[in-house]
Structures are given as structure tokens and as C-alpha cells.
Image: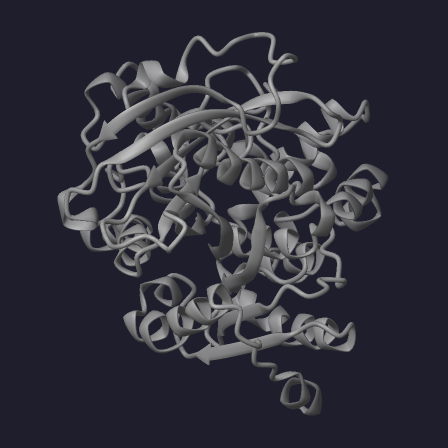
Length: 427
């Protein structure tokens, strides 16, 4: 952890309010904090998807999930170096009739960025998102409750909702969180379904990934996983809502452009590179990527969650076009290695891909070219384009009811997937 920067006295006081003993009385906690503690130090005897512990009947936010209880599961996954680590998730079961074999189909809910600290894990909170938005206006804080509302939508379609935390977030075991690093995120998402099946025989083998923002990137990684998905699991399709299309392009052309307002995410990317380099024996300094305007917030970014930082730092941070990135960042060999490790393949094979993106969303600027590349590689692609903001995309009942859910139902029914590649390539 870098300790070379100094934060403002005002910010340190604010962060101390957040981090200094207030968690035990924090409104919005669902899962018992003890669930994430005392993780076994040696996981070598476990297989991927094995369950470490379970907390049943976790009570969720009535306004979001209508009181649907969740099941918190801690399970075992593996990083790209073969190291086992503990991961956490929430699983929710529908109340409708099962399939003839006694199981329900599964939808993975891969949420967007929530931070890189253990306390940011979605499974800790009753609305599946960090809730202590004390620095944000109330009208802004509501939007993250949509993540819980997505689970309600999944249950309304009579699917099991599997909602994993990201690799390294949740269990208090010291494991690094790799922000946007493919293999740990991919493995822990797949293993979440295996763990859910180990918990209940009513969890089926067929699944679809539904992801927003960073979760949409994970969906693309799932799409290319192929034989990495163990039998009897079967990935039927991937839905990416406002997901980033190309990681390197997104970082250097979208997030680094201060007019898009996306530069705060560069802090999480920086920590992703830092942890990846640390575990792969490479030397990396935060200044290799970040410019002078962002370096002072490095330590705070590691400890606080997205709403904390957005409201207490980013909303008041003055940045300049020249102060966001190190001008030599794209030539940094460690960063290049990281971007190679997270690059999305175009060889998605036979798994159908549904992309929903917006003309108003800066991330949507990279999506058309990405979809063309997918089509050129022979993939099956459909798209829906809206004039929403990045967050409004996941709010839209119209998008879900008229487009996403019919497409998902057809994938579970093994119907031929529609393909809009001829139109996409003609543009």
C-alpha cells in the first residue's frame, strides 16, 4: 500500500467518520459482519466451488426485494496463478414452479463497480450496494438501490439470482482485489454458480450472465470462457448493459477524458495494476499510471467505497486534462502486461451476446466497434440502443420487459438466437 501521499485534513476527518468504528451500527447491513471474518488460512484441500460457510435467511430491503430472504455463501475460487481464495455471494430463490427436473434456471447478476475494499462487498448490504451515502444528496443516493431491484426482476422471471461479490472483496482474508483482471473475476463468477448448486439441488445447470458496467465486462469474459466452464454447467447467453467494450481503449480514451467524468475509475484501475504486478513479481508505482491531480487520493481509494469517494473527494476535486494520467502511461511495460492479461477475446464461439448501450453514455462510444469486431469473428450478436445515461440503462423497465427478458427466455428454451450482424457491419 502506498503511503507517500498526504490527504486533506477535511477529507481525513470525513473518512475517519466512515471507517472509524461506525460499521457495527451502520444502517443497511444485512449479512452478519462475522460471516466475513476468520477465513481459513489454508484452502488447498478445497475444490473450486466448495462451500466454506453459509448464512441463511438474510433479510433484505423490503422496498427493493419485497422481503425476499437471501442466502449468503462463502465459497472457494482460484486466481490465474492457481492460488485458492475465498469468495462471497448472495443467492435468491424464486417462488414459482420449477422446471420438470425440479430445478430453476439461473441468472448471474454481475453488478458494476462498488469499490475495492472488503467493506464494499454488495452481499453485506440489504439493497446489495454500499448504503452509507452521507456525502451525496439524497436524490443521488437512490440509484444504487437499483442493484437490489435487478434481483427482484430476476426473481419475477422465476430464475434463481446468483449475485457474486468480486474476487478479493468481502472475506477479510487479506486477498488482493484485482479490479478488472480477467481470470480471478471469471473464475469466481463461474464458481458462484457451482457453489449455489452445492448448496441447493434446485439450482439448475443452465445459466445466463446479466451484467451492468464492469459486470458487462465480466460477461464478455464469460462469453469467451469456453471449456473453462465445467460440466454440467451450460452458459446460454450473455447480457451486457452499458458494459465497457475494450478495457485499454476505455481507460486511455474515455476515462482519461475529464469531460466524460469517468476519471475517478482510474484509481481502481491503478490498484488493479498494482495488485496484479505485486502478485506477478513486477515493479509498479502508482505514478506510473496516474497524474499529479489523482495521486493524492490513492490511499483513500483503497479504503473507501464508491459513494464515499464520489461524494467526499471526486465531487470537489479539481482536475486538468494534463493532470489525470502520466503522459508515459501507455508505454509502461507493467501496465501493458496488465492490459494484455485483461484484454477481451473476440472468439466468443457459440454463446449468443446481447448488448444494450446508450448514445449518452461515454462507454457506449466504444461499443459499436466492439460489436463489429465480434460479428467479423462469426459471433451471434443483438443490440438495443437507448438515449439514457450510464446508470439509467439498468433502471429501464422498458428495456428489461420488452427486450432483455424475452431474449433470456428464448436462450433457456434453446431457440435459435437472433443475429443483427448484417446490420451492424453495414453501418
